[in-house]
Image 1: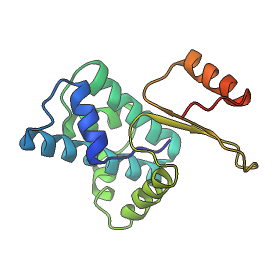
Image 2 (image 1 turned 90 degrees about the vertical axis):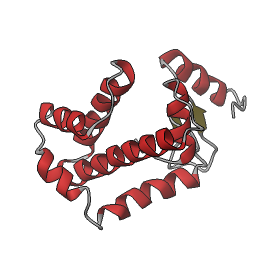
Image 3 (image 1 turned 180 degrees about the horizontal axis):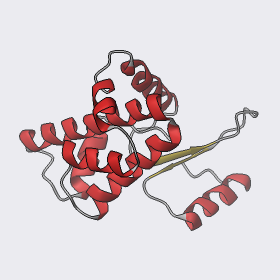
Length: 158
């Protein structure tokens, strides 16, 4: 699980929400919110582990994307508190210079696999040099099964 923030991912998110991507103020605010959530994710990952960080970002996305609540630091704090996390500690750590290395490592992985959009799934076997499967966009269990069957059958999906 690798969250990324880029101009492309921010614009895609704005389009999904029906926001104008050409409005600089709205784009800047959306970018700032996404980057804050990214930094909080990495702070939680470093202080409480990957599982808690994934739970945080999933719960936050549910609040913002499914329940249509506007992102705010207060909302992020509520989500963190619901998970039993110390938001003040996490928030303070999210501004630590060392955290940038974690963010950069994830961005390097996204760059290596040429991931431009979210969500994107990359499925591969680290023990094999054979190509894997890259699925861009939202997908469900049936889509995933179809992609894997097609990959095994030698049909290129990308």
